[in-house]
Image (tube, rainbow, N blue to C red; front, side, top):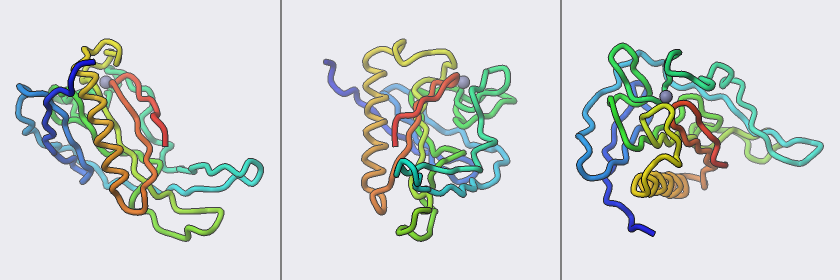
Length: 185
Ligand SMILES: [Zn+2]
């Protein structure tokens, strides 16, 4: 088992105020590019509802109907690095690991409401962890140091969520551009 690689976490931001953090190994270029897309603020209106039949809690998030679904490079993938004329969720033209707040979150830290009923505010945090800027690369294609960098980034996300208010529920996704997979909640 290799040791944890050295890494740094330059923080950036996106045009609508969402957080973006790169996870870089030594030698990576400085992260200086600014997101200049004309984005509207994120508006999340989800809630948790208890299923009367199963007793399970489910997330109802109607505002996510317009979210990006299985994008291709031809249609404009938001998880790829930015290119001239095709700005994405990652302003740099290359990256190793990028973590940012989901633009279409199923849960939001801004949710407020009654926590004692069968319909509760969708309180939580949704972040996307992109582990490569190459659209078709798989996690299995990465070298071990790079995989450890991804794991390190995931640990950071979990620690950040756990230290947040009210024991935030979290929903994470890993992405490689052509696919994003749910990690859990
Ligand atoms: Zn992509």
